[in-house]
Length: 206
Image 1 (tube, rainbow, N blue to C red):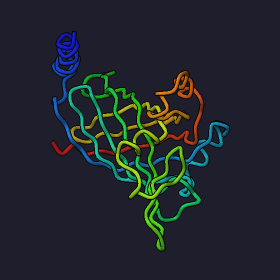
Image 2: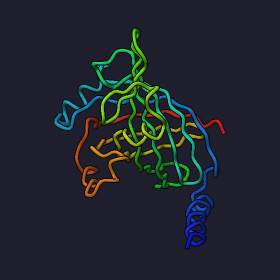
Image 3: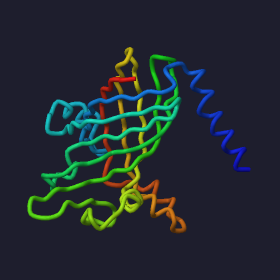
């Protein structure tokens, strides 16, 4: 049974890569702007406030793609307005499917948001659903399991090695660690703290 699953996974990775053009492997770096919007904003206000610089958070990111499997990590100044010295990491994985081959691609997947703070007079902390904890007291698996899960959708426009993308992030109340509890899958449908749009500009290095 395990060998059958491995064969199916290899087919899903390798065959789309030959049909959907683009290089099989790709690694890129880029900048992203995340717009601090609210689902309660009217359409008119949503577009008007885009001109306000204070509602945008700009960060740097890296992206890797293997065939249709897309993985990314974006580092931003802390998205918690109550924290001055901090970094927000948005990491995730998903699929990149062609709408128009070599021109427009649809991206969808999931990821986690992890926030680090660096106080001047105390140890750095990492904040998950359980609240902030000293970095020295948590390991990598705990950070991943306690970070809130978000769903992401995107549309990428390719211009040679440059990709201009539109991104939507919707955070739920779920965490990977919470899925161990019965009925916890319902938290994927419950809105969390983040509901943001973004614009990305990426350069493929190879």
